[in-house]
View (cartoon, one colour):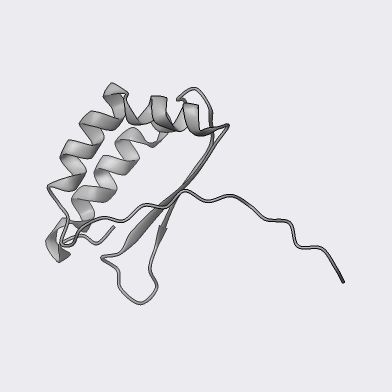
Length: 92
């Protein structure tokens, strides 16, 4: 997520206020916030969910809706999201 320069503190406040609620959502295994070293206006949330159903349920929750409304007002660029899975590499 890319935020306006004047909005990073507001975003951090929103995240701190809601991170424990997100972590407490059914199926949330972990949640982390990371910030770009090169551009302090760029943040990533990295979350792990039991399955897609748990993630979808969170995306339909009041916690997500209220957090998203407040967060998207602070963006400086369109947000991008990916769903990924770990791959185990075999070999030496």
